[in-house]
Amino acid sequence: MNVKDVSQKSEQKMKKAIEAFQHEIASIRTGKATTALLDRVKVEAYGQTMPLRQVGNVGVSDIHTLLVQVWDKSMVAATEKAIRDANLGLNPAAEGQSIRVSIPPLTEERRKEFVKLTRKFGEDSKVSLRNHRRDMIQEIEKLEKEKAISEDDRNRGKKDADDLLHRFEKQVNELIAQKEKEIMEV
Image (tube, rainbow, N blue to C red; front, top):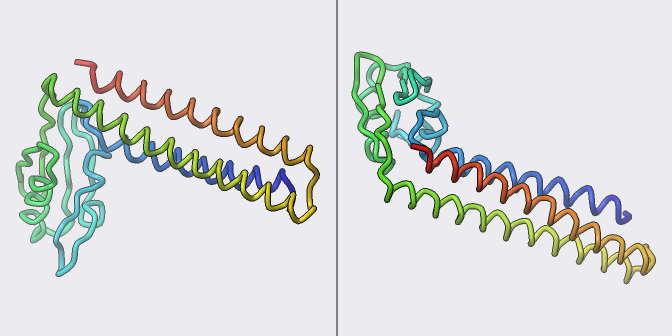
């Protein structure tokens, strides 16, 4: 194993951290209907808890309305209850085998809460990135102790680790700014 291998492995881990962050912030309400809002909803179905997407299709009806098509008619009430109890501030309305979920406009206070939540997720993501950088540096130092790489390679590897971290932190900051803009947009 050399510095390049360690760097590539760390870069993959950092990319996964960014993807996880993107998934986290996708579920934060922005005032517009998006199917990601219901990703965390779990429905009590057939004696077990399962994600909403396993009991029906979720689609966007219009900019302020989601439409959930439940596959099993007997699951409509349970699905409606799960959406209501998901603490998203949504009020679903059953219509036959489908459920309409109106997305109410966000209050200024609620928008600020969501901005704080976005920043918290961003900071958690940055901590994860820093941990990956630390692991990368430790692996590089271990390789140097084993005489597998030179001191110059170690220094180059540390610089690569810092460069990777800065690149991915910049990406997180851009995603945070973009999400904040979406949230604060009236």
